[in-house]
Image (cartoon, rainbow over all chains, first blue to last red; front, side, top):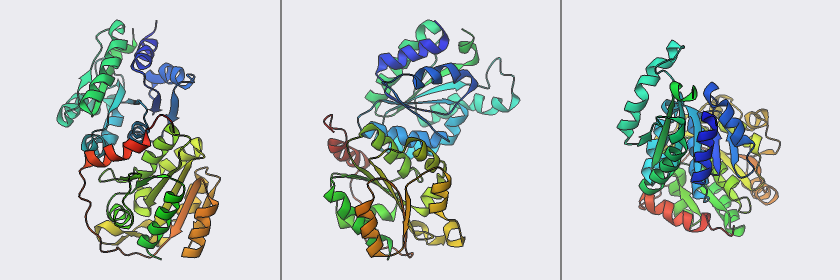
Length: 165
Length: 187
């Protein structure tokens, strides 16, 4: 088992079947797993906000969508999350590599890293932080159930320590 | 030809083919609603720029259902990356119609970059889309809508808004009504 495989198992358990992605180094193995899965439509996108739109359309077409992105992409998506997902009541799971936290070597990641939980709190978007690899699959599944029930986005935050296994 | 005239043609074509329509935020939605309000119309009320993305996600999810997006020049300029993503996926049930009137019509008719030379058809081709067409009059629009099942159609239009009512449906009702037809498992 690897951290990526644990998250992937959660994606499968949740029945998520359309995924948009913007890469992060920590997501490389997970993106590859998703891309090879014939049951999942994988759409690499140019910017996270665009991905939020594609996921909304996918939900309207009866799919279970998720976005894979770095937490910096949350900043690029806030208007869409508010004036599309929250306005109409559209579920979405955001699986985020959470950079800019303990162990971060790139100083430019720190401001958004610190702001990420606060931005989610401000938006009223619930988030799950697996405390170990063993909880990751369950947290992804709970994130989808929470999104569906609340008719709104939810997030799974995967900090640097998570990827070290 | 103004936006309203183009939307009338597109809406007529959508009815013929039982297509789903995703319509751009602002006055375009009001114009479509006033011309023909059907369960197959999704009216965007926020998230400017994302009509083409919503339509792409919908088309990929319902490959046997035709999807038409009514977009605008200002909105496409806000999400140009979408043109590249559409090219990578190229779903054969997806037609993106960009009504390009060179104007931010819902906010006071400020000129967009297309009024100063930006060419959306060329940008769409440069992003990798192989089926791109541009029309400038109603006769060619009608013909293009008959000929094109998918791809990107740029409709050059004059600025100007019709005097139409605000949409009174609540967002959750717009979504529920649209999804009653858009996510049937049989499609």
